[in-house]
Length: 397
Image (tube, rainbow, N blue to C red; front, side, top):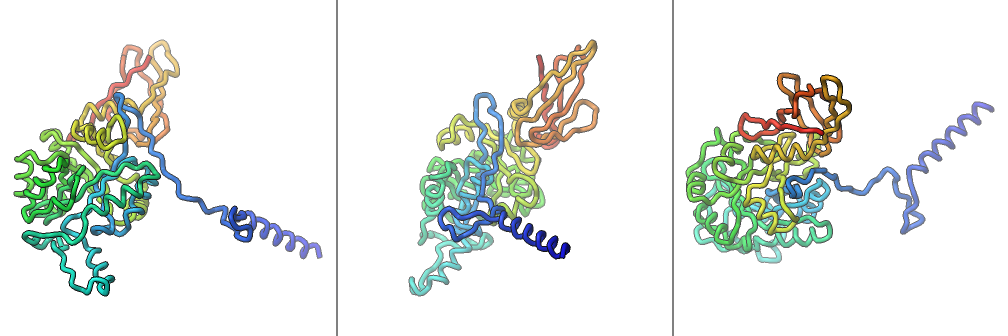
């Protein structure tokens, strides 16, 4: 009997524990909601202010079902906010809109099946001379702007001029005013059309599907004419260290972007890293202020643990992320604690010593001779050139 009572008690305890995994829904008392379910919450990525500028997290290269992405605009905007971004550019392909064909087939009874696409939807086919678009290439921008009204994400209107990646190249036009007026059968003229609207043009994934970072004929023409304002050094999972040098030599803003087509939870979440992003040093989160920052080349590229850009900006960013505390001043040495106050992991090295991985909101200790005025650290996951890393001198009082 005692054993039966014990088993009954265990069963009752199990039922009680199971019941505690649910709570009563506020709107319907006969509905229980799993206590283990959590609403989606934003991942906050903490970055310092640098030289009086806020550091905004941006993705300047995204796609939705309105070109060849796999999700709609509202999903893309909400996803960007949840991933910790402040800014997102909408850059649907002009020439490559694969989901359009699917929707045309789905709605054929409404338009009589007489639809003809003005521009071929494959990037390796020749575009159509004198194309007139039967769709509104600004639609995705407006949908994204509408979806972003309630979460504060800043939407940059844009589009991608998409031709054969190995023989021509891909280029994002940012801050466009009318995407319907950009297309031309000649990709150089298309870029000129974007610039005529006041757009900034970014060279996308310069090493994608290529044997080297050498210019295609079209790329060379665009660079020689001064039509390129920025360049991706990181695109999705690809990193082009040599482009850091190109950006410096050509006076371009540098960027890291997802070029996202699927869900970032699939493309980036499983890697354990934040999605690639362009860090924009701007006074305000407005189109005017962000554009000014890009024109002034106040950007860094951040992706898969690497931070790339102009050397002094890298140094200032790292120094602003670090807090130096004096623990004790001995007869010969000063004992310091170095704390990373940002969400970015830094790989640091002092002189000939072994490297140290300084995780977000973690600290490491160093001792220094009292005769030294600075602690000099090489930041190995920062790139100011193809093979160069900044050396930052930290001071203490």
